Length: 255
Length: 283
Image (tube, rainbow over all chains, first blue to last red):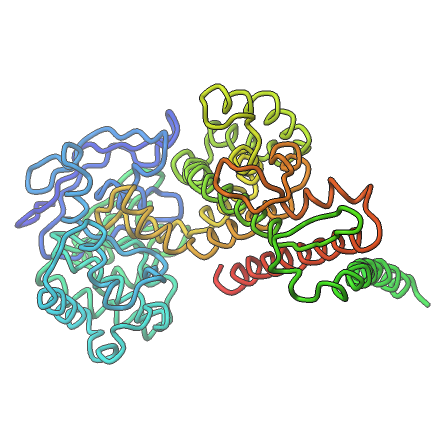
């Protein structure tokens, strides 16, 4: 596969939690800019580890070893300061996790606050409003900006978390099964949102949900036991998988 | 009657017994205090004079209330930075490592050491040291007692705040890290705001321990029945004056000691209830 404009290239990446226990094995792939790339595979296949390697969140665990490179616009992210990298690559987690001690407003600009970046009142207001509009949450919360984010519904909380990740205008947004804790209506809203957001951002999405990958992703990776088995245009993968393991997974033989 | 019911009644009876004993204790304290209260009334609380000489007897608790608060607050101020650092080391920086295990086990062991041993150590090690660096002539007083007391309450302040800090959900910390926060920023902006009330409560409970601590304080505070004049002054606490004098006291003297006991009982009950309320409400 030769993506038109690539933003990220993963080069022979291997990650081991313990010595010789590889969660990700020799993965090589390029990720297309302004597209949604889905990473699928059964539990324990390494998809979340691969995702977390892209903003180096996997390094929070001790004893982890990483070999290979990931390049963002050609620069190896393992040679960048993590703080800088994580501002360029935002992340949304499995369960909505707004900061419970902060208001909705503060949650949106939490990245600035955490990094000690001082903004003028007008700049903050501007960022909060545009970001909340981007995640289609503004109309629902504009009169409750200074209430705690934890009062929102699960789906609204997750959109707030997307807003928090977007406030820094990152290049890439990583999402780790962002709808697995949500009801179908909230899931649909998040999916619509992601399709909307890919105009301005590159999205990488780990999902357990094959139909979700089929609905919204442009490209799909299928991982199995730490290896990248197949990486294709989503339509091609779902209609004409090359590897028998991909086919087995997609047809529900295992997973 | 089936065995379930019998078990239930036995358990009920046992726990009721505890209530009865606690109630009885309070009753004895109130009853024992009455003779003193009849003589001195509310002035007992504000009079600093304590004179057991027959014929010229006069009793007031202010010197001991002041001594208790002074010693305990000083102990708390010394203990907080120690406890706070220990909690962050054990529950965050070295979380789940052998080092955190060793530190938290040692801190817990401190809680199990009998207070008379702290007193001995204070008497034979800390006190001469304080004399040798010229802080005080004999080394007895608020300062020495407070320092030992501080070490004694550190385990109470840490063990609860450790578990509160560990309870801060990992997903919140990860959210902060994913926004480019450093560890220090995560601690200040995520861990502490989420654990704040629990940590406060654990310090309040530790303060409650300090108020009632008797043996080690009695051995080090100098047992002078006067209002403490400063940090290096001698004094006496509510608990230590009772321990020192109850054996030889009788009549109004004894009743005054019991009234001090009642006061201490009420104060520590209020402090403990406050701490527990904060934990329940916010943590």
